[in-house]
Length: 139
Image (cartoon, rainbow, N blue to C red):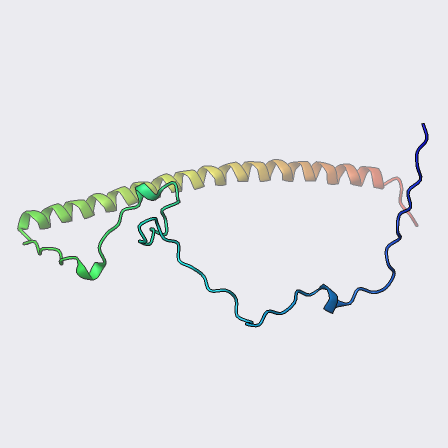
C-alpha cells in the first residue's frame, strides 16, 4: 500500500487588510425594520405567552381604574383590638430581645473561657521560652 503525497499550500504571509474582511455596504445604512409577532388571526400575542408560568400571571386593572376602598367606621371595639394587638407586638419584641440577650451572654461567657485558656497557654510558653533562653545568654 502506497500513500500518495499531497501538497498543502502554505498560508499567505501577506497582511490581511481590514477592508477585505468587511461586509459590503448596502444602499440603505439603516438596519432592517423589526416585525411584530402576530398570531394566525393577526392579533398580537401576549409578551409572556411563551413562558411556562404564563398561566400563573394575575392580570389586574391599572390602579387608576380601581374603585377606592370603602371607608370603615372605627368603633371602640376596633380601637381596643388595635391596642391589644400593639401591646402583644411590643411584648413579643421584648421576648425576642430577651432571647437575643441570653444568646449573646452565653457567647460572651464562652469567649471569655477560651480567652482565659489561651492566655494560660501563652504564659506557660513564655515561661518555658525564658527557661530555654537563659542558658543561651549571648554577650
